Image 1 (cartoon, rainbow over the protein chains, first blue to last red):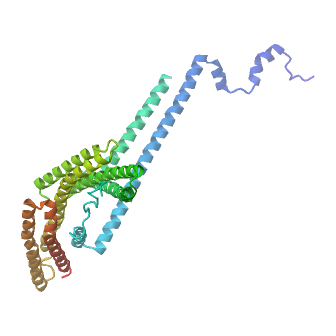
Image 2: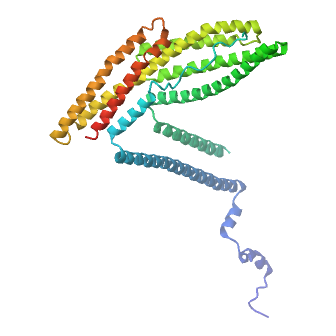
Image 3: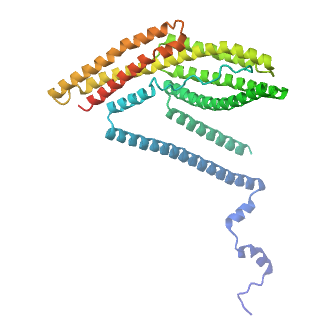
Length: 127
Length: 277
């Protein structure tokens, strides 16, 4: 017979928890009251909600900043192109002169923009 | 739950605040100049009215054709059915004729208000004439609110001949002012351009060039100055319409307007040559 074998069943039963693979914290949790467990859970949920809110907030800021930057960049690009064209092709006086010539063409007295409507002023049933 | 409500509400308020902020930011980036906004607003309204006017004029032309056919049929056949058809077509074309006139006068009013180069008292007086004509056309339109017979149509037709005279006077008053205002504005801008060019480039390029430029500037100045008396003559004719009315004035000043237009064209050519010296 093996001398190492413990034959005291009472002690064996008392020591049986030590033989299980149990996490010490779980032991603690199990020891907490129901209310305390609820509070712990609520804290976890709070952290998740706050974290999500902050994340969304940061996303929104990034979106607004990126949008305003892209609009400004587009405007700058268009303005730069127009300025380059003006400097290369026409000087400021030439530009003003061109505008005046266009206005003069529109103001030609022989070309009425809005002539009186060609309506029949003698609509009647008599012959 | 209280905590969730608070968090949810604070998130909503934050989002609303940021959305408002982006709208304000966008608005600040837009043009805030009220003058630019007014011009754009006028241009937009004028464009819309022009489209409406063209559409109504097209419709009027179609209805006028139908009216002429129905009238001819009635006089040929003399039946009650042909009379009924002719009465209907006549009323329809009269209604559309009034609509065309009303839209045209509204369009003319907007163009007058947006036209620079016109003295304010004259502009206001012309606008009042247009508004009065619009009101009379609208009153005339009330006569078509019910179905009419042949006798009533003929009465309305006689009344329209008086209305159209008033409408024409208001229209030609505005058209005359606008024709003068357009050329006056170009004349004023040409004078300013000439003066600015003289300041910037008169003495550039050495003594020989600057002498040549000075002669050219003087010649351009003489040409532009000579137009002032022509404008004064036209203004005087406009201020005294006499028996021929504004329709007569509009036709009478055409020759002077053409002369001014031609001189302005020459002045702008001179300025173009000056830039090449």
